[in-house]
Image (tube, rainbow, N blue to C red; front, side, top):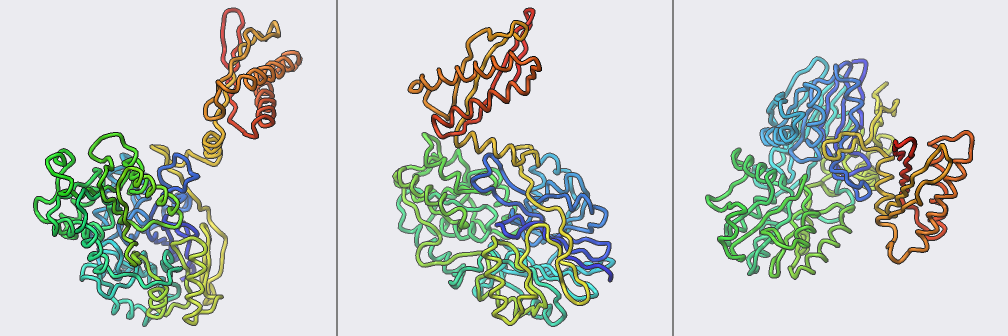
Length: 561
């Protein structure tokens, strides 16, 4: 073996968007292909996926995409890869079923059918490595860790995991298999860091199920549950509680219903007969007979709760007497939004509770003890903390050091970093192109920093539009400029400002018309700059300025924007 590299394409210094590559000579193994939901400053962006430049440049070397579980942070980027490339995709039964839903929902990838089901007993031999799997515990069944075994040693990727000693068989970790992997040489461990800061023991799922049932038991009105549809374990707990209390369950959203139906069909979700009802049937039942599960667009339930709280009418409007139960554990980045959402729900005269109430600490990710146990079971020579913002990666590094691993064998990375194995140790090699590809509607990667800057400017300071007609031959303004503004000032109360801004426009245009070297670009730029300077002096704001300049000449009109 001449070449062994680990390439970080996503999932480091961020929440979600997991994607890693292991290069072994002329073969490349892609581990997960996830997305992340945008931060607030990414205005209008639906989701973010990894930059696919590395995949495009090395497509002939990629032997497969290997998936750990069926959440969007592991499978959400698949449609944007397989739409143009016929790469084999490997995953467990439920993971593949959910991956198919993901690819079929996008018209560019719905014809892809290169899926291959594997399980924890599978081992796939390639020319330069063998890929095998091990069972892990997460909030969705069929979660797996991945082992890439090379002649130099093993690269182990945990995926999202935690240890739950009280887990039911469908979710149990195979501790024996992990220990067996650790008996052989583990060169590097890529390990989940999303919950590395937690000092609390994760509550086991039996305790959470009991809390949900207890919460539902004393609610007299309708129960509205905000959950992630692919969190199958939480969905099961909600359905079990509803069934025990003889409530019907309605699921808002076709995508969520697809996921639930798929999990039911494969036997991963047990739903009593006739408990599920559709939106039209809601009117046939009293509020105290209903549990409404909403998952939101793209699996983001919190923002939809805000719309439900503000809705004027409809079956999904939050009403007086409702209990809104937030069954998802928000990231730190979402805490402000969750607080705002709770306030909006209370304004709608409903009550709010979360799965984190009642002194519970629910998480699908490993805490300090779990992370250190995984390290002690696998005994890796090197560790690469992944899946988390920098402070989480750094905390994971500290925890790894406490187990006896030297900091020189712990690699804190960023997107695009490459770890190359040479002379018995890893070191940083030349980085590859990596970053974010933003998805906005049907647009893939066509939204860049300039567009986002313009959106931010519009959101913060609004737009100022100036319309003027000129006669370039006669070197005069045909009609006095008209101005308009949106999101900048209240025009009725700012007539002086508007009149003076017209004078600024007139002066800028007249100066350009007198110039022998007249240029349209210079004219528009002067109008923008002079207006921007004047408006900032008056308001301390920088609106987006759009000059629309029309030329009249021999009965022809031309607009210049």
